Amino acid sequence: MTSDPQCSTILAPYAVTPDVCRGRIYAESAPRWRSEFQRDRDRVIHSAAFRRLEYKTQVFVNHEGDMFRTRLTHSLEVAQIARTIARALAVNEDLTEAIALAHDLGHTPFGHAGQAALNACMQEYDGFEHNFHSLRVVDLLEERYPEFPGLNLLFETREGILKHCSAQRARQIGELGRRFLDHLQPSLEAQIANVADEIAYNHHDIDDGLRAGLLEIGHLRELSLFQQTEIEVTARWPTLDSKRIRYTVIREMLNHFVSDLITTTRANIETLGISSVDAVRYQSEPLLGFSALVNREHLELKRLLRHQLYEHSQVIEMAERSKGIVKNLYSAYMDSPSSLPNMKVTLATKEPVRAQIVADYIAGMTDRFAIAEYTRIVNARILCTH
Ligand code: MG
Image 1 (cartoon, rainbow, N blue to C red):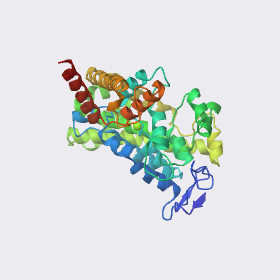
Image 2 (cartoon, rainbow, N blue to C red; image 1 turned 180 degrees about the vertical axis):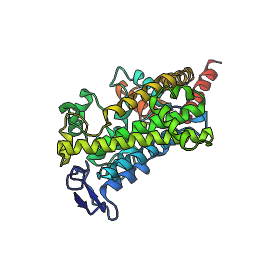
Image 3 (cartoon, rainbow, N blue to C red; image 1 turned 90 degrees about the vertical axis):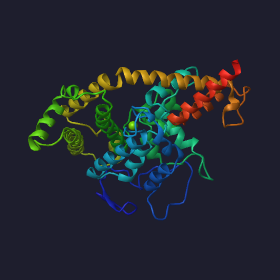
Image 4 (cartoon, rainbow, N blue to C red; image 1 turned 135 degrees about the vertical axis):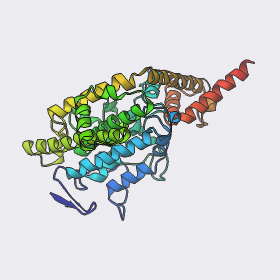
């Protein structure tokens, strides 16, 4: 264990510390009151892309109800789960939090439907991938600082944001892409943010799915974990109303996954004698993981959510409408770039460049702004044809 004076905590030898941190693209003077990792977390929170997450779809489109998760509340839940795991494993909590808060910054409006539509529009170029776009947001698109483009985040934060990457893209981004070509693992902090994302959405989607009436308790009872937890909760609190039983079962399940993840990962670290960040990176598999039994439960839960919720006819119907909005916006801006806020783009701008500017603009939209823009464009077309 080493003491990190900047973080005032005791970190494990396999944690990312200032000593092993690979720094920023543009050199900066050290912050006075915060660690470099806290600085990254704060830059993410102050970004425009982070604020826009409030009005972006997680599963349910932003205007479907005020109680559903949005990308913002999802990101906060991911950060909260990730910090618990990071602290329990004595790794860098501030770095983990920065990655967790930034992990969805590149999401389009309308969730995965928006990304699929934009990816289809961009097929003749490099396609569109929200995870890669998150990196583009923090490296380039946020314009806030006088000395550099983007947020100039630490290598380790950017590494954590880029969860996956094609070999073609990995070759374009230098050192950051190397692990995808060499089949290395990211830091434990990045692994934690990634799994915390899955734990968060599995559980909040149960809650949101039940609230929306798309999931039924009967579906969830097909899962032995849900059934068993429900029996235990009702035996312990026999007079509890159904809503509080539901919340308690979901919370107990979440605890079950987080606890298993921590104890299994601790055992992995001990068995393999992991004592440095490099040792974490050079493993053939991620060190962070569930036990075999809990991994099965995790996969069963994901499968059930896919069949019963993500592929529900109402969700698919909304997704199709959303795809139509994104595709129409894309072709409207490509045909008429004068409606873009970037005044330098014209029809004479080379098509791949124009397509990237249009994709960046659409990806940055909130659900409601995309709908408003779509309505404006459709109305303008109706006026033109009269
Ligand atoms: Mg996420």
